Image (cartoon, rainbow, N blue to C red; front, side, top):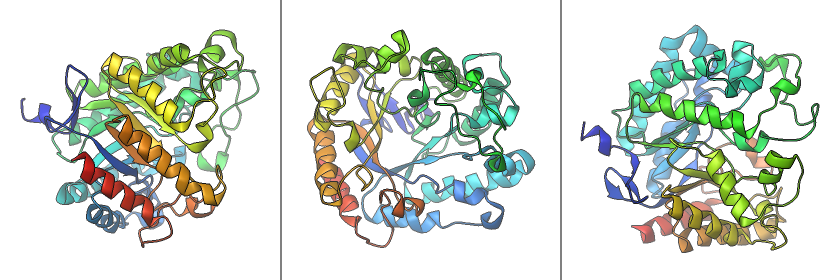
Length: 377
């Protein structure tokens, strides 16, 4: 179908990112819980995202990345017990975005341990194509992608959030997923709840194949952060030796395997001076090196999160770091990026990353994106 194959974001064979068939570059926002807030019993009728969409539209913010699911197992209760209501809420969300021309990049399995917990399997079953975890993933992908594939609001499909950061971490009893039984997690963890690069690669490939059964063209995204500065060494030797640029590029490929047709990183001030052996790469250096490899591999780069908050930075440096990131995105021609985070009150205090929808102290961040999007047009 030539019409639907042009909808949303697609990749030209030369690696150019297209929107509705036309070359495209833009910066959007993470509107993390815009949909998830409609899943709690006390807020099933919540449509506060409508005001948020209007606020973004007025500021030339063309798209959002968001959690298209529940975070903890218990946040999947509505989906499992009242699927009709769940999809009514999602329909209303997608229709509100369509009405304003806001693009949507839903992340469908945000938290890496949630689906294994829901089906009662160890987390490493993401690496087993015949597991209950993968079967659950396929079912949800089939339902969501088949339902919305003809919506112009859907720009692409993302699997989850930063699965690569939990891959290959050393020690049998270290770095295990969080236990919070009241949120529906399993009550104990073992070494089988750890993931390897091989496991996440299987999960990403199976996710992409499931998407492609219904949507032959839109971009598919892992949702990964940058490979860790020692990702190659963790995977190959179980130690924290810093990787070379070549090893970084190799891990980008391993962690974003075909048929995933994009590279995904999340880039923050605390990445500065962490990367590439003893070279102490700046924030811009990391963008440059990643973009060089993305161009070589003909996979558009999505900086799915970037931003600056006071946890990583002295408050006076937040603005400086933020503009350094934005300048890198523009200078190295990153096709698509999204700031963290819009209208998420828990991040008012936790590091001060929240950009409030009331022309608050971080409004300058949206104004800078507005101006950049004008230039990119």
